Length: 482
Image 1: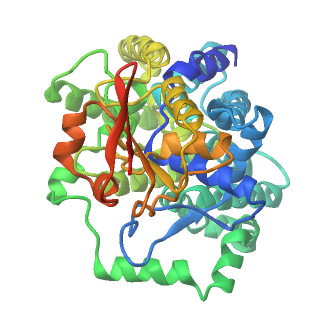
Image 2 (image 1 turned 180 degrees about the vertical axis):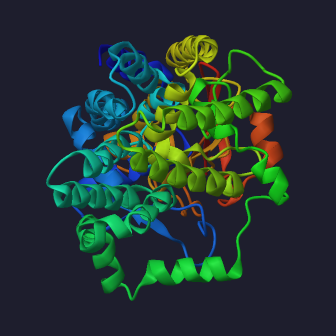
């Protein structure tokens, strides 16, 4: 837990990635708090996000973040405090889960350390993003599911497992989808007890169910519409999509990155990483074959493998052209690590490889936490964003005024907008109001870049003239007025 606390909180002010989804959701939380409003739905999902029928996840993500922000007067990094606490609780829970595979303390401690220190656990615990809490909540789910085999009061553990799936479903529909196979796989052994699972799921899903009742099944209709009309994530053949099945096995050790990019320690050849992925699959198969009579609850293991296999195939097929959607595997992530680690610990030769991968993963995680947010991908440090926002506030702009940026693609400057709406009495116009402004603030890497790209946010108000140009670290703040 001490290692986890260090990895999840050290250097967060300097390394926090505050852009796009993370900034959008924090701004939504701030507005909910300032307007004293409640909501049943949360962030938009990528499916249909720019269409006429926008779909949304549940709102639990907002309130998890709000709990942290209230602790430190809406300082940006405070939104990750609840997520970090959940992960710290999940670490001993993961240790308890490892009892289903071995009684050797050193193996269980090694497995738990890998879970706590893997780049996936570290990078996603350090950001405010709706799938992030699933990493810890999924540990609670798998432990409850294991207890349905090994503990008494089975109905209680089934009910809790169903509730946890409902909570995960609220945070991210597609991540929860593989877990919905659980009652189907266990219908014979659970019989009527499966109703406890369904009951727990429904109870945890009540906010979304209430929203659907109040809005004529808006989300359900939207899913049917998008699935009927079809959707794409870039043209790739089925074989090309499935060729990345091994990514899910290797991202946890830092060999690949996923949605949030970081500099990898080594650029390994594809033939090498594919071979390693194949070795992992073979090791898992051999482990199951040689230990099937030693593991007390093989039914738990095989049910988990079916769910994990489904999640892998779904993720490989759905991932974008340039990104692997690791978030789709968050709900099965603890069980995935469980399989890989104990399969490798079954033989001395693969144990040595596992130790190498563990060191590689830990060094990758240390590299992540000491690397400043500014990177080749254009992330801007929080302090610089706040500094620029303070300069705008002190400029006392006459409304209506607005802000845009010309750096990483977020033309509405969501991250900067968060600080302005938090700290200023006269707030900027909304993200859609860029016409008839008195003042427009532009954050850019160069004036020439802004003039060349001619984004709508920059050109919507006619007759603006640059009156001020201020250098802040690596960016320019351009002030345009009528």
